[in-house]
Image (tube, rainbow, N blue to C red; front, side):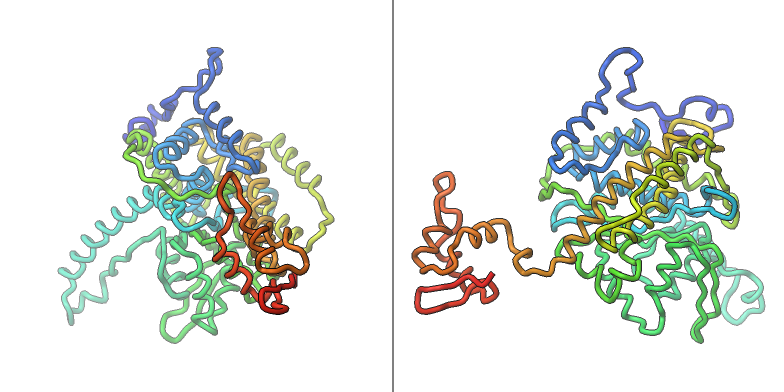
Amino acid sequence: MIDLKNNTLLTKESKKGKIFDSQNKDIEKEGQIDIIDLEIDFLKHKETHGNLFPIEIYPKAIQEIIIEVHNKNLFPIDYLGAGILSAASTSIGKSHKIKVKDDWEEKVNLFMVIVGQPGDAKTQSLKFCFKPIQIKESQLYIEYEKQLAEYERNNPDNTENKFKEKKPILKKYLLSDFTPEALILNHTYNKRGMCIYVDELKGWLKNFNRYNSSNEEENYLSFWSGTEISTDRTSVKSLRLDDPCLSVVGSTQISVLKDFGKDGRSTNGFMDRLLFVYPNEEKILQWNIESINKVLFNNYNALIHNLIEIGDEDPNVSTVIEIEPEAKEYLFRWQNNRPYKFFFDYERSIEIKLQQYVLRFTLILHLIHSIVECKSKNKIEIYSIKGAIKLFDYFLNNAIKVRTEILKKNYFETLTELQKNILNELPKTFTTAEGIKIACKLIEGKPRVSDRQFKTYLKDLKLFKRLAHGSYEKIV
């Protein structure tokens, strides 16, 4: 284990004290205002649509890391908060499970989709959040190369010893380009768990159709649920995972969201398993010369490293953590009071999957707080349940937002706000001159569109019918 403050190995003695001191210490007890709390209040006030990622679910020191990267690199809060959640999930794998009741345990795997426009730091944000895991993988690769070189020295071709010494294997946490068989094979090398980490998830979806007989989409439904997976093909030996733990994370553009609902994925439960991170505020990333505090990054790196280390002793054994009675009562009461009648069928399915996610969120938050605040991890307390429910609300809002986006059937709904406004203001029939007068009216001293832009708009046959030269009728 690593001390999160000093980035040094923890000893039994050092674990007794607080291992992660925030740069801006929580001084509420001293009657003063906490800087991080002020930052969060300001961000919530600035968020006009009221669905900012709830970073208050994290310990104060993790909030501080998010605020630092947001302020210095201008990465969206949503991407950072959700990215850390996904990186923590990948680090934990199946080393720990949450016990809900007898014969019901949940792992922490998440299927997450980062949504945004080109240039809004989707890739950069995920890269920051997963950098500690990529550092770990680099270390594992260096060790693998050394072991492989030694193996090849000891086992030259055509010698009897070649079949007696086991060839080294490379343990990975992240996969980006792979076949279905390679995914299962790599998971057998790292039974603790893996994460599909891709920059553009559109390519991941396309691969579902690359192998016609692989039932890949059905396999992912099983991976999400954590049920056994097997493959039997002539090209490779038979493989089986009795207790898989697979996460998925990557980004997509808003214009591609409809692809997630194609080929039956909007009705077979696949889409409902996806956690969409969809900020309301869209900004193009601006460059700046500010640097992130290295101490804060070292703290974050140490947190992820510790999450990996807490269950590395035996990848086949999971530590099962129970919920304290008070916290369990709170959780069950919340679930029992959720709506059970829905206006749209997809709302029911989203609700059910997100309720299951609450259990996964709870365990992730519990382990993060246990490490950062040096708390006992033996029992899950109510603060983790409450934090998980905040995440439920956040992802529920985003899921409904995405469904609304991909279910648009009316062409009118695909228009920009400016196009809609002009269309609404035009009469049922009009001349070109009358249309230009309406469309090109001055706003703050400037025409809102040019003559040329409006005349191009008139060529849209889904919206306008030409009655005669210079005369048009609205269709919509």
